[in-house]
Amino acid sequence: MSELNGLIRRPAKIVMVGLAGLGMTLTSAFAANSACDGVKVEVTKARKQEYAPLVVSALDKKFKPAQAKFITIMESGSWSAAYVSTPVSDDGVMFFQTVNGKKQFRDVWGGYADPSEKPELVSWAKKLGAPQDLAKCFADEVTE
Image (cartoon, rainbow, N blue to C red; front, side, top):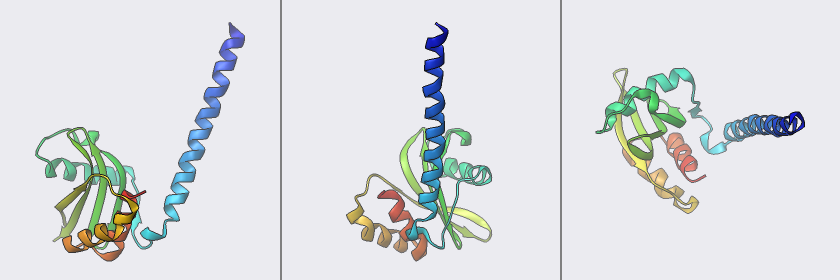
C-alpha cells in the first residue's frame, strides 16, 4: 500500500508544479500583451478590496464583496474596468469613471465576443467615455 501512496503523491506534486508554471506563463503572456500597453493591469489584494464593494453596489442583487472573483482589473487615467464573476450575474466587464476622487459605475458589458468583433467593442467602450488604450485592452481581454 505504501508504494501505491508514493505513486499517487508524485503525480500530484508534478501537477502542482505544472499549475504554478502555467500561472507564471499566463502572467508573462498577459504582461506582454501589446493591446494593453499603457494600461495598468493587475489583480492585487488591495485592488480586489477596492473594487469588490463597487461591484456589489452596482448590481441589483446583493452578495458579499468577498464573493466577487476578478479575472482582471484594468485602469487608465480616470477610467477603469473590472472583469468580474459574481454569484448573482454572468461574468462581465464593469466600467468605472473616477469623478471628484470617487469611482462611479458607468456601464457593464457581458457575453461572448469573437475576435472579429474587437472594433465594435472598442467603439462601444469609447462611446461610453473610456480612453482608447483602455477600450483596446478591454476588447482584447474579452476576445481571448
